[in-house]
Amino acid sequence: MKSFRYYLEILNEIKSIIEKMNYSLSMVIVEGRNDEKVLREFGLKIPVYRFRESGLPNFEFIDEIAKKFKGKYITILLDFDKKGNEMSNYLSRELESKGVKIDYYFRNILRELMIKEGIRHIEEIIAIKRKSEI
Image (cartoon, rainbow, N blue to C red; front, side, top):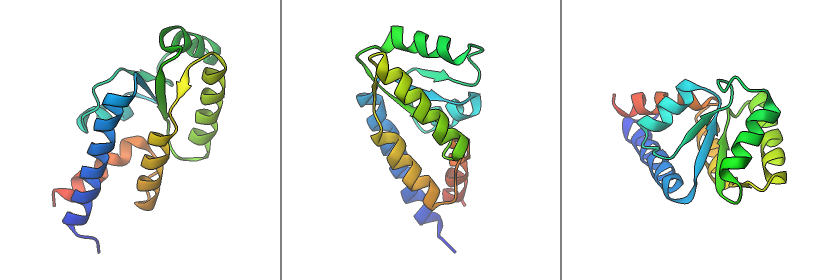
């Protein structure tokens, strides 16, 4: 069984990644409110756009992001399951074609860390925090 210190180290690593996101990126796209809430709890301060809750058709959501963030770096933190990966790839392609710079580093490093812990949904990061407090 993994110790609370193990989870505390992972927690600190996630906080460090999110702190770097605050300085490197202009915005993050997530699926919904719970994803944003968890990232905010871990220290995310930059703007967040909720893809699933935007109420816009995909093309309008993409156009809105492109207008506001053309030439700027953003990352897409949709879930790390098959559907989330497919949608993340789709959004990345479409936004890049409209001049938005997609940062893949943060998605990849968080995915690697979370999948190692059996976590595939952004909102489940909170489980690591709970385990570090036991």
